[in-house]
Length: 208
Length: 208
Image 1 (tube, each protein chain N blue to C red):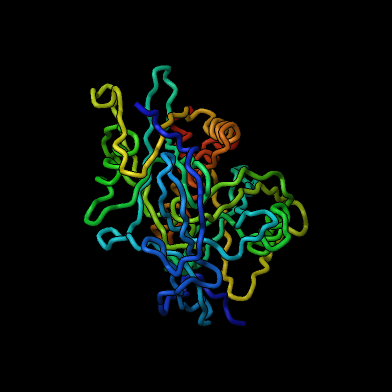
Image 2 (cartoon, chains in turn purple, red):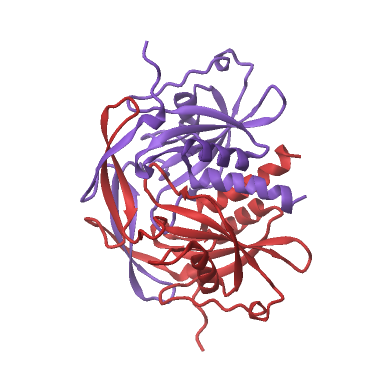
């Protein structure tokens, strides 16, 4: 039996110019600024967005009660070609045609982490990098019952070409844990997960 | 004297396909997955990234001590053509050629908000949407002395075509304040600012 490949084994072999891709394309926007002056803006778009929700993706917040009563959050680690690095992120996925946010969240959590969860609520729609792209997402909060037999030994159901590792980190000192992991392994992090951790950390000093 | 145009007065007039733009382009990446299988990935890139830092942008965290002793964060509001909406974000800007992160942060805070601040520290490099783009950024923490005469009546130094409004919101209940503003005005929000506010909010229940 061969060992599971580490995400760190992936590597870039070439990057070429692309006159608009199959999945990622560019658009030129003509708009009027607030003063009425006509202007031009460029953006990147995902060609995969469907009209069912007009939302690209769902990211999943799952907080687990660990054995020592410290709450932990589920994080995934995978090689992301655009960054040329392994990246720490919340579990997430694109919404399939005719799929709801709720079913996307539950499905992606099983596929990427093996945990079977229950959808609790979703956030408002938010934009990943609104000067660059119309890419948008919602946060889905999913509960996982660790006493459910299906969650005793969770097995991810990865698609061909997906190599995702699951880690659980305590919410307490999450920012420090993430930065230590990044320093130690030479990986990097999704800005949204990082900002979440910065908010958690700042709360300790400013809200107390 | 004409009144200052509201960001809500902006509107989209046309969106057309663009075979790669001046500012936003696409790239095709050839890579080997962790198992050694050759694969293709597509991404969006900013053509403006310079080799000085290899970082696209700086977002600015500025916490103010308000008169009633509640700490407030500086947020900007502007029309973002890719979203077709007015967006709430942290003050931010692209790094100019040969510019440092420190000088970008101080310059952009003055330009977008009028506040003169002192650079305190910067975060690690983080990726805005690592499945979609190599766009990356750092968070810069900037101190603003409200007793400095330059900060008594801050006047933004906006470039032609920039229409940015500055708001200050208490960190206490930031998530609720942001969601109320979005509901009331019909604006939207940058995912990174939103995740920051979710982290702040979650801290109240899970870290106490």
